[in-house]
Length: 335
Image 1 (spheres, rainbow, N blue to C red):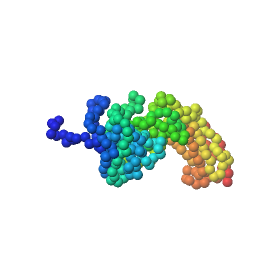
Image 2 (image 1 turned 60 degrees about the horizontal axis):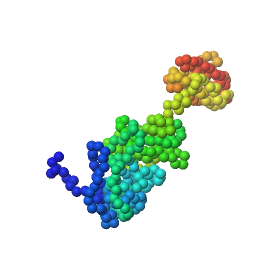
Image 3 (image 1 turned 90 degrees about the vertical axis):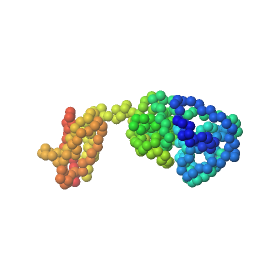
Image 4 (image 1 turned 135 degrees about the vertical axis):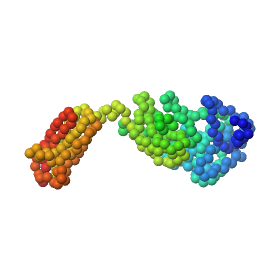
């Protein structure tokens, strides 16, 4: 591009910049060291892209102490800090020389950094990635932080990663941490358009990817502190829930008044007809007649017939029919 079209001619120490490169590289910056004690950075209400020019990394709460009460959220490409969430969910714990950060503040404010001692160091981690070859997040100029609690097979994940995806493209990875018996992960999700966000868990112990049931809307730049519960199941766990046989259980209670519970198991997907007959063989009521996936099911009969009128006391027959099986049980209605 002709040089006269370039409008960015100077690098300011207090600013952050997006730099797009053709391959991973190390950026070495030449110039005079910045005296952080004389640096005042005006921030406007909302989002600001801010540099950290100090000569030594610093704890984020110490580095941002001058504006800590105004901070809504601070993030880089992979980590975040939010004063409103439990501390174990904050993955951005320090500011590093040579890095830029998105900072959202409630009101216009002036940021001043304390002056750590030491020599300047270059930031070699252009994008921090977690070691899992199949997931490599794409980088965009906007993002949204998502805080999650994770349950797989109804239990916590001992060790693993949580990946966020839009249309099959990985947009962020978070390391799963355990706190007070539950599993959590914080993800900086990259993207510049609204979309449907899906999740996968990589369980390090089982070496297995597990699809999470939940989907949420991705909105670039959105902030919040809600913790979203994500649930998923392994194939083996789901298979373990499938009954080994197809059968009708005895109704309970029996005798009954005013209602009784009827349970059946299906080992295979099938059309099911569950009906109540009197001793003359006449249909009293069809409880259900539908196609069912394998699983366990419960229904309740309240003693009403097909016209929703109460039937008289006496003995009735529950008939259970599938594609492969027919079974009947007696029940007694008392008045």
